[in-house]
Image (cartoon, rainbow, N blue to C red; front, top):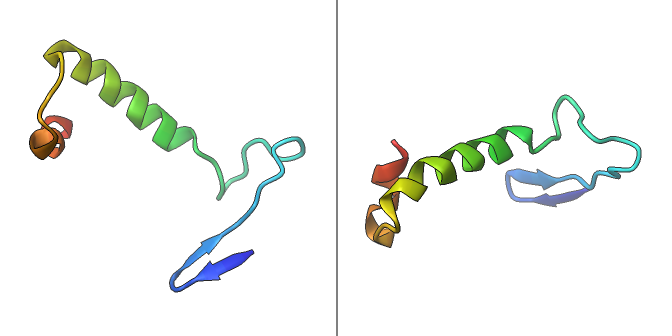
Length: 55
């Protein structure tokens, strides 16, 4: 385990633990999948307005 300030980084062996109750990326993968699907209809957006398109 790597402890940096208030964050701790845990290494996961995915061959033995695919999804753990505390350590998984399914939520963020799902979020970006939906966000990309939503943003495709705009055919590109300015970087400075990126946050506004996610709301």
